[in-house]
Length: 539
View 1 (cartoon, rainbow, N blue to C red):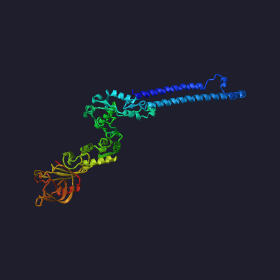
View 2: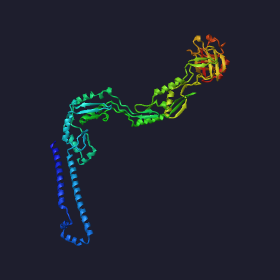
View 3: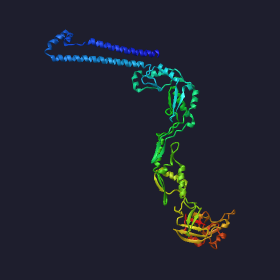
View 4: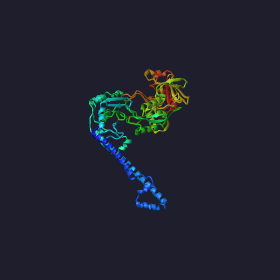
C-alpha cells in the first residue's frame, strides 16, 4: 500500500474517532444543561425567586394553568433534545459521506470493474499491482459462435505489463462526490491497460487457430422468404463462422490491450455478417410481393381436360436473387410448359387415324396438330402470375388442331390413301367424297409424302410450274382450274392430261408429288375444303 493510500485510511479513521468524541461530549453537555428533577420542590428552588413567589400566590387559584405550563415545558425539553440528536446524526452522515468522497478520490468506487476485472475499493497502485501479478498467467479465451473455445496464452506472445497513467486517469474521471450511486449503478470502465507483446508471435498464434482455417469456416446465410403453406414467411439470417480477418485482428489486439480475459467473436463482429437480416426492408418487401403472386390462378383449357397453375405450383417457381429482387425459376417454369407440350402437342407425332374405310392406321409426319409456342407461353404465364389474378385460357400455340381427343383431326378432314390411290373427304364423320387419284411417281423420286397436314389455301385457275431454268423458262407449266395446296408445293388439283386414275398408274405416270384428280372430283373437293382443314396422307 502506498503512502497516499495509508494516509487516506488514517484520515477516515481519525474522522470517525472525532465524530465519536463529539457524540460523547454532547451527551455530557445535555446532562449539565438539562438536569433531572425528582420533585416539584427541587424544580421550584432553581427558578427565579420573583417568578416563584408569583407562582406561589396563584397556585391555589389556578391549578389547571400550572399543570398546562408544566406540560409545555416538558414538550419543549423533548424537542430540544431530539433536534440535537438529529443535528448530530446529520453531521455524522455528512462527515461520513465526505470521508468516502475523499477516499474515492484515489480509490475505485463500489462495484467497479475495469475491462471485466473487479477493482472495487482498490487504489490505483493496488490495481496495478494485481495486473502485474496476473499478466504472467494471462489467457485470452476466444468464444466462437459454434460453441467452441480457443485460447491465446500470454506467455506465447511474450506479454508484459507496462505501467502507464491510464488507471490514474480512470480514477480521476470518477465523480467521487456521487460515490453512493456506485452501490446500484455498478460502474464499468473500458481502458487500455499498459501491456506489450510480440506482434510476430501473435500473428503466428492467430494463423494456427482452428477458426482461421478456411476449411472450418461456414459462410453466413441471408434472411430470405420461404414458402410455409399457405404463404411466404421471412426466415431469419444465419451467422456463419467465416472470419473477417481485419475485424478479428483488431478485436484481438483491443482485447489484449484491455487485458480482457474473454472475447466473444460474434459480439465483437468478427464474422462476415449476412447482408440481409429478417428485419431488412428489402426482405420484407420481397415476401409481400411473392405472396401477391400466390393469388394468381391460371386454368388452361385443354378440352375436355384442364390444367391448373395455382399457389401450390407458383410457390415453387418464385424466388429471390442475391439482391432480394423477386424472380422466377426460369428452368422450372419452362419445364412445366415443356411437360404440357409433351402431353398435349400432336404435331409431327405418330398418331392413330380412323380412315374412311374404317381401318385404323398410324400416321407420322406433317405440320398439322397441336403445338404450344413455348417461349410465348412462358412470357404470358409470367405476366398472368404477376397480375395475381385468376385467368382461364388456352396456351399460346404455334399451331392448333381440331380436337384434344384421341384423333386430333376431329371428324372432318380430307384423306389420301396412297396405297389404294383414292382420296376422300369426311365431314362430321361421314364420307361425302370418294375419288380415284394419281399421286407422285415413286420411281422418279416424287412420291407423295405421308403425314398429317393442314390446307394452306385454295384458289381457282392457277398455273402450276416446275423449277425455273436459267433462261427464265420452267421445267413444266400446267394450268389447272382448282388448286388446293397442303404441303408446300404439293396439293389437290384437277389433271385433265391424265387418261386414267387409280390403280398402279401412278408408278409409271405419277405426278411430281401432287394429288391429281378428275376435274369433277377436284371441283367437289374444292367446295368441301377450307383453309386449315386437316389432310391425312397415309399408306
